[in-house]
Length: 504
Image (cartoon, rainbow, N blue to C red; front, side):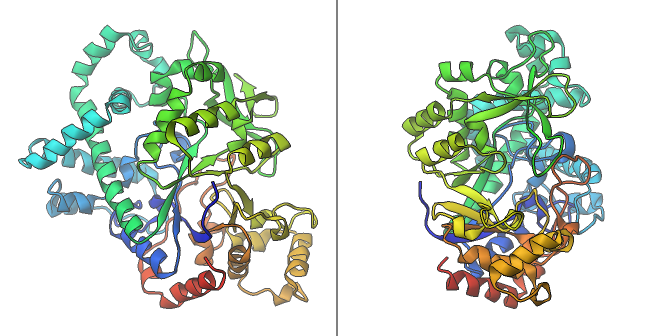
């Protein structure tokens, strides 16, 4: 569906400043929304909000629906009467201000949340308890499986679900019922965390919407093998019938990001089964997400037309093959069930006419990235003269260099093309490359423009969010304090001026 001309900022909540070592849904999040409003922005794009597993990647979550407990704000739990200031001061630690030290943050934050849960169990607040019970009933379809999965995982974090006792791994009803009694407190703990997460998130979203800001959520096309989704719905995925390991793994062939491709390791879908059952799992996933975000970015959209599958045992993605997917049937079914969807298509990578046809059939806007625009010649589709209105333009994404970092490392031919394209006499005339590309993005005909906060702040690659194909030191960046945004009136006015100039 076409969208109104507007612009916004890409920033994951983990990147907010916070004294608890990781960004959360508290004061800094509200101050960021205030900055968006003051600078004329209408969009806030986040990465997937699910609980992260191996590598702390938001694209490798324990659930396609659940929220990340690490984003829960302890200060808001104090306001809710679930923690005390003493609870915070007794456990307080000093964390880095510009990165997330996950090894320290995870045990610290989970300990605080456990204290909040114990206080909750003793809480005399009847209304709070009533809302919790309501949440359990409304979300039982996914929440019960998720909470069991997490409680079971807590008993031995080194084991994946297919290494559990066979009766539990295969979901024998009697074994599940017996283990549910054993894990009752752990199950309720994870149900409580989801209740608190979605309460805090819903209030934050309502605040954003009051400021006329829409939130762009992110659906990864695949889910992690070690997730509640695969354990609870193994029939939806291509698994080995004996080991329940992925029989066929997802990834992409060699491309701009990696000479050997990207082997993600997620199991690919059993599309025949999903189509036979009218894509019920996908419909539930979209339906739930639309309660908590306004727009949905589909990561790796091309996988709905054809996907790269790699046999089990391969160590790179090079020895894979393309398989067709029933994208038309899927999106027709979703549209018929849920109505016209506010979907944005991440259509980067190896894109074929068939992928473009699928995208355009449903009027999903695709993506263009300015950091890709100056490699090659004037035929490069990421150059603005090729843009169409129904698209999104980014300076860069979470998988790219920052604009300053990109400018510091690119080859001379890219620099020269940028100079020619923008009408400068020489490379020496280029000042503030980040603002030059921000201006360029905002000026294009693309209906929507998204700028990573790192580019607005003019940061180099020390602020990069992710390096595709690597595991270490990703997803860690955050800015040090809210005053960088809230007290910087010049920054607000500069962004507002450009936003208004280009009718966004």
